[in-house]
Image 1 (tube, rainbow, N blue to C red):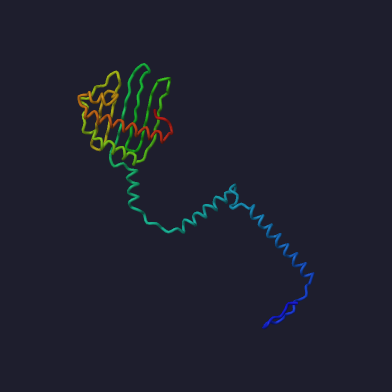
Image 2: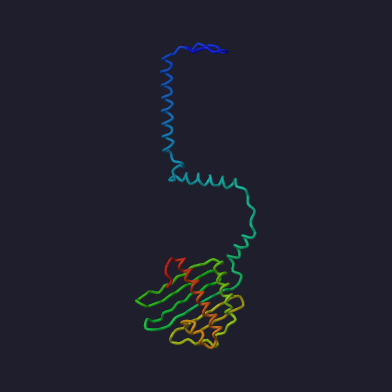
Length: 235
């Protein structure tokens, strides 16, 4: 019996009915079992229909289409479109080819590579030392790489040089450099240069020094690209 306080009314509690309590507990137990069974069945149900019938793929495509259709329309960026067009369409004719080689007791050993305006890079390295096989690789580079190569050639100012007083090719070896850039078309031929001492001993040390440093830059540039594209040692 609940004690009465000031300002409160006493309400008699209903008598407990054991039959109703039993039926209520049974119904609650059934509800719990149904919930657990439903959870188990939902947990084992796949998120999408089976892909064997193709319905899952269609459902996914439809969902993506609805989501994409609700996205706001973005204004085109003219600057990005211009950069993409410039990257796909070269503005001028461009070609670079370098060759160095000699013929000795191991046959014709040489290194040669070339770049074209569309981004085509061809590389060949032939060495018969210890029965090595020729390395031939071909790849395509982006227009930004071609622009970087153009800048290297322009900064060297090789187009202002002349090979009239450079050492002629001999039994030690031969070097060839051909560059086509815009209205300039140059072709140099000289012997192999071992060090800067050979450059200083020539009749045109200033011009040959420009050629020597440019060749070193081009070799490093190409070796890096070949290593990145094919993950091999280019030499």
